[in-house]
Length: 339
Image (cartoon, rainbow, N blue to C red; front, side):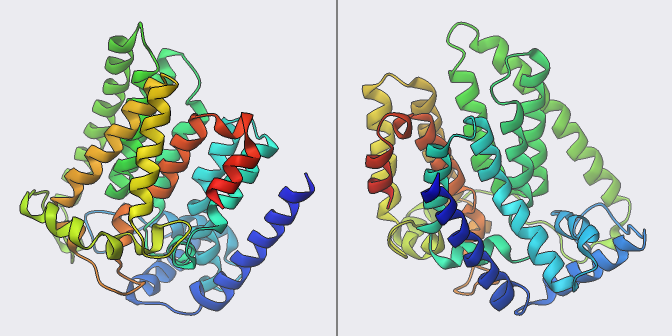
């Protein structure tokens, strides 16, 4: 208990420094627009259902910042973004019974990430909204009711609609849940698929509504396309594209290759098919994303980095690690391996 409290204290101090010395100080035009949105929302003025001037994204961070408007808008937005960033980890802890061992592993996982990961997680840029929305599926993840399965699909699709970088988490949640139903996987697939269908209809309805107001749109979403030649390009610069997401050592993407290999190997040894299929799905989605031109639209800048496209990766990998249940039997060994 004491060690968890110490780690929690250190993590809070860590976040306090990042928010007060970076996230609420250094801004770009997108963040100024989000501050304007928070101000408008606080006065009851809602101009459009997406990120202002776009037919994609959202102003969720600005909406959540409204109750914090007694602070400066810079601080309120940084705190609201931080809350969304940490929501998947908090819900993951709840899903695993809020045990001290799980809390310790989650805190340590966050603490061994590069500081740039925390920069991205606390910087108001709509990077974390989709992942946060998708993580709401954790609340009902262990429920076996038909409505829960339907809602999981709906939530995963809705998260993707908020921000496409949530697709990694949504895909893994979906396949994990289907693979965990050994004798009833077809019914599970249909119920989750129905949720996806309803969510997609809602997404298309929203896009249609926006198409009726072209005067609102300054920056349109990139068209979805694939170029297989880009896969080799992504693999050649993976250290750069995942630099802020690599635990242990900054800018070393091979760490994830080791983690993927370990997760797959252990899941095979323990016949943990949900983790195995979810891990293989994650790898497939990553490789498929490498072929998308939008994924290569990044710079060596914290304000528009490549990593924003893969921001769900640390959440997904931790999700798989915890479902291997190693932390329950050998918490000290797991902590040593992670730390």
